Amino acid sequence: MTDTVAVADWQAWQRSWDRQQEWYLPDREERFRVMLDAVEAIVGPEPRILDLACGTGSISDRALRRFPGATSTGVDLDPALLTIARGHFAAEPRAEFVTADLRDPGWTERLPHRAYDAVLTATALHWLRSDELRVLYGQIAGVVREGGVFLNADHMPDPATPRLNAADHAYQEARRTRARAEGSQDWADWWRTAARDEVLAGPVAERFTIFGNPADGDHADGETQSVAWHVGALREGGFGEARAVWCSPSDAMVLGLK
Image (cartoon, rainbow, N blue to C red):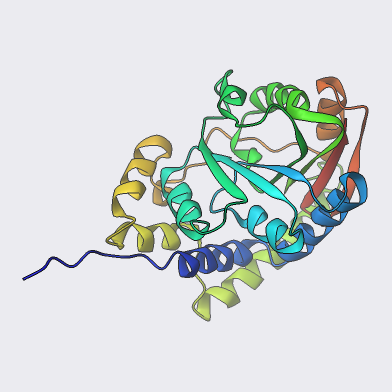
């Protein structure tokens, strides 16, 4: 009698992650398109990419499909999401992944390359406190080559428009309620499903030890700032030009040009 070895369908896990994220961000693909348009416009169609706080590698997945000559280094601390990323890209020689804590002053020493054409991140850095993000922007400027680009798409609410913010919040809550009634998973549901998976249960348990259980709320230390704050922090961090290149009522994408 032989033992049965559990095998995960990494592509299915990648798709389920994307669907869960789209429950929160219905314009997620649009921001990815704008991000990659900017990359191609500034550094060309064969970029060396650093996918920062990469999660399951959603940015890398889209970048490598769009740019056959691209390579990508994904960096994250989450063992469960990195397990999915490494499984999903197991047959892709253009992608590699590094475990690192972006709050560690020496995280850049773990990277396989000293400089990148493009550093990209989405819906991740709001996990950091503002003082930590300001430091990180300076470190990112140190790994972007001269003429290279950094793009961050994330929650960047504008405190000067409270009525618009309230209306958008109410609209998005109603949309998510409808989607939930149709069977969509939210953040906590997705993690509960992953924790029950035979292959992912171990990495998920490790993830809960590092970040806490999503059911209990695990964004407690994070902070959001306005577009103006991000633009100022990027300039102070060493980018010669910085501005917003995409926005919705609650989110935006800022670009820093080295």
